Image 1 (cartoon, rainbow, N blue to C red):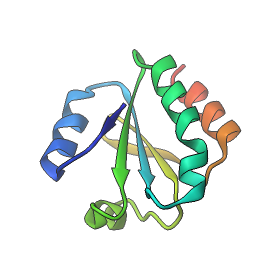
Image 2 (cartoon, helix red, strand yellow):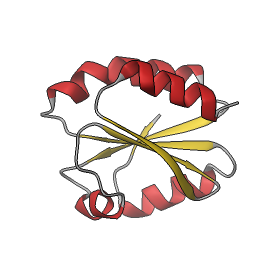
Image 3 (cartoon, helix red, strand yellow):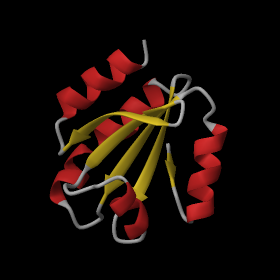
Length: 106
C-alpha cells in the first residue's frame, strides 16, 4: 500500500504495477468514513500484495486526480487493470470492497 506524495510518483506507481490490479483509494484525513475503513483497507492490501497494488490519494492534495477520476464521495475506490478503469466502490462499504477485490483478483 502506497500513499502518493506527487503526481509523478503516482504515474510511476501506475507504470510499475504492470499487470496487477490497481486500487486507487481516494480519501480525506478529516473524513470519518475514511478513518473507519482504513484498517480494513490496510488488511486487504497486505492480504493481496501479490495480486493488487493499493494507492492512497489524499483528495485535498490531488484535486486534478479527483477531477480525472470523478470522485464525489469519500472514500472512493477505483479499480484499474491494464490501464483501464474497470470498477469503482463509493463509500466505506467494507463488504463490497472485499467482494470486489476478491472477484477482480481471480
